[in-house]
Amino acid sequence: MRIGAYLACALNLLCAAAGAAVADPVADFYHGRPLYFVVGSAAGGGYDVYARLLSRFLVRHIAGRPVAVIQNMPGASSLVMANHLYNVAARDGSVLGFANREVFFEPLWHNPQARFDGRRFTWVGSMNKDVATCVAWFTSGVHTLEETREREMLLGSTSPTSSGTTLPKLLNGVLGTRFRLVLGYEAVDRIGIAMENGEVEGTCGATWANIKSARRDWLDHGKITVIAQLALTKHPELPNVPLAIAAARNDSERQALDLVFAPQAMGRPVAAPPGVPKDRVAALRAAFEATMVDADFVAAAAQEAIEITPMSGAEVGATVDRLYAVPGPVVQRVKELIGAGSGG
Image (cartoon, rainbow, N blue to C red; front, side, top):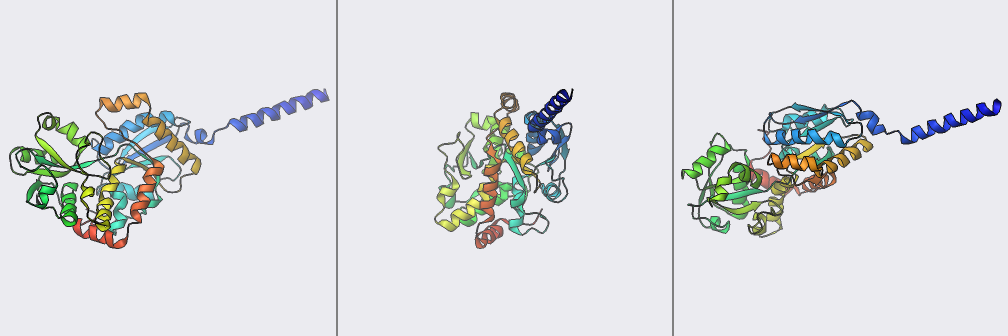
């Protein structure tokens, strides 16, 4: 009997050890827990659409299968959400943030309302790589960016802080283009109508993905010419359209353009607060990468005409670190040209 008791005890210990060996602390943490997707814009906007799509599929690839919960937190072009994510949100891997990519660089412009260090966020990945463009209406007579150094071109924009304003101002100040801005259009679609009516000759700042989805008829009928890509790499569908940065004449000009164009590579970034445990960071990143190639996710994105060109969390972090290392004089020059850092 004593031998039998010892054997039973030994078996129990072995079983307990085996159970401990296969225990998954990540699964234990996420099991039945809500995973909050906090969006720095109102429902229905571009970042919200991407966040809702990701939320449907990401949880399938996380051990423990957490429950996705969307929370919209609009305000100050995502600055309210970014401050919340950095200073208030739980740092345990249960909160993910979706913000306007430019907001993470507000500390570079010395915006006092940005209460965070963009380098310290936990980067999970980015869902697409945006490519902003400069486009000319077909009746404008403008066919190349170089021509805008020789003649004035009238562009429509919404507000002083929109990309449709800051990007042309940057090109004017760095490359010597002669864009003249007409501000005050209520929305981007109103600029399109103004182009069609001959009020303005084009616009700079609209992404290629947005043009394809919102103005397909322009492309089908040759109504616009894309004269430049405002990014660091070309969109695969625009192989013959030059990059504006290729027109830079020296390192200083290239650094200035790089500072503003590079964030587009992290077009739809997914961030978590600083200090998330390493095993949960690894799990979130692995789940993100698995989602990006999930056949059901890819099909859903295609059905909704959502462009997916992902970037890993490590790549997003490297991009942020590189831009924060840009020399101060270059940052100051760009700030003066585009009026950055107001927090508006």
